[in-house]
Length: 288
Image (cartoon, rainbow, N blue to C red):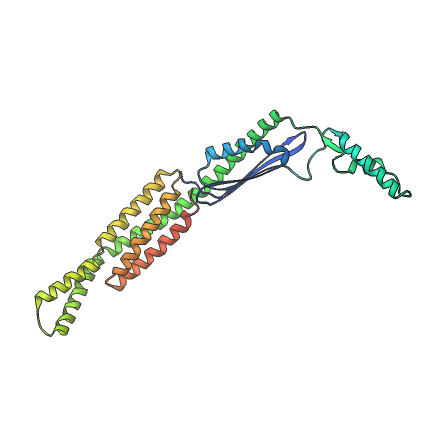
């Protein structure tokens, strides 16, 4: 199965600390590029997440975000931070000396002071199990999204390949006729330019021309590369780099075909092939 490198997935669960969410965003990239945005208190879980993603993804720039959702966190069991309270008392005493008329701190003011209230530490074992479960769920969803889009990309590429094959079947019969007609026209011009009917020299010139305009090799290579594209699509897996290479080779052969075209019809066909190849290449850039 062909997979895209683009996808999005999110998994959430309720914990005593609030709603824990794991979000995965994936876009195309030449290699597997993992970026993590993890809350400080969850930083120790990053290696496990990295290992999980590396085991199931081959390519793509993946942004992984693990956090407690803002605005929906339930208050857990909190306690007073003695060190923060002592520091606040010291500062309050200094302020009272400097400003004798200032009102004393209220309890509400103290509780709102940064660092005074501290939540109970996370249960590392339980949190690790929860994040592992979230990771599997989000990763399964991401792979499903990438698979669905990959199927659409494969269908588009297959459509372009089918159109290329049709173009080749149209141009192949034109080549012998075009060469024969152009050779006859060239022979007539040579006779007029040479001023004689030196058949030996004319045959030599025509032989050189035939070598320069022979496109059988290009047509054969184009057909072979098209076969390889279809084979890669059928095999599936991580075919993106292989398909990108084949797109480059197809474009190279189409360029040569265009440069050797003996008639306008063959030239037009080569240009149409180049357009189809470029359309295919644009889609291939998103395939894993």
